[in-house]
Image (cartoon, rainbow, N blue to C red; front, side, top):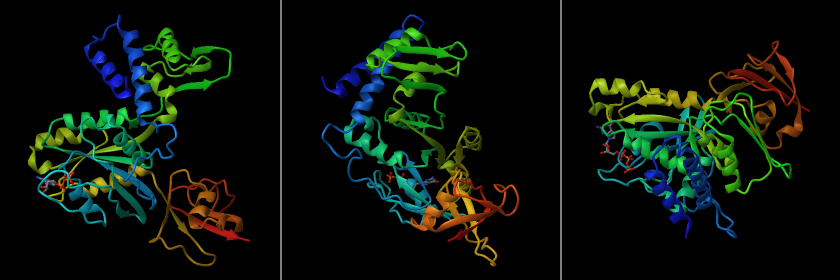
Length: 367
Ligand SMILES: Nc1nc2c(ncn2[C@@H]2O[C@H](COP(=O)(O)OP(=O)(O)OP(=O)(O)O)[C@@H](O)[C@H]2O)c(=O)[nH]1
């Protein structure tokens, strides 16, 4: 039986098994198996050199990357047209966005690349290549922007969430607080800081056996961890934890009460591309969620140019700053002078390991 059939079989079994105390163990095991098979589906077949799938890999450029996802005709092209410098054709029919065309959003001195996640439609993750393309593109994204149609039901969002979930993408979720260390021998050691409320050791042991894991140290640090969390930890190397903004478009076509209800949901922005409403709020939310750091570089004896920041990722060090100026710059580095909230005193003389903060002024002194 092929992997796809096995997945389907488990899904059917899960659907017909009633959830209760007596079936908890069986369901947990099935979920573990399902995650294992899905992973097999996404992994390149032995002997193949590429894991990315073809056609959709766009070169990474810019300071950050946002992956756009949504059903056909929700307004992705219209949105791209409004916020980026790439023109996209808008048509009155579905599936106009056929390829992953990057657009660039310029904001606060940063270049934010916006790409399409390969068009997701219900069940796409079950087709091998498709799932891999989604993962390959999403893997490089710093944030996912899910565009939804406010005039449609909650289904569209659930389907996309499930789709991403099944290819190993976790949205707005922290890694489960479980320490999992594989060992060469010594068997399975299971411990917890507080007794887990939703996990039992017997089930975890059975899942580990199914994964052919016989030696590991496991420490559950959070008593609210579920069996799904436990399975995620075992599969951690194949998962991507990415932030997601839900952008509901076409709010011009629904009642004010409905707009108000949607807008109160977490991680959500409401907008209308047609009426030019909420677009700026969305751009600000993207910027906020990317946690970018703006730096002003300063030459000796000259004031920094506060209109032209250099943009680096959150938690960047002086070394990262040097690398983003030029790959050989680090070898010329003597020390850096830093003014701003990361400096203990202004200016602070710093080495390569110093972490910069947003809006710091940095002067790099070379040999
Ligand atoms: N009422 C309303 N219609 C909109 C809005 N934004 C886009 N549309 C319409 O929705 C249709 C689809 O817009 P597109 O931007 O092509 O959507 P898309 O998601 O890129 O579609 P595909 O390329 O098929 O994936 C067009 O007819 C737009 O005029 C909006 O804010 N309000």
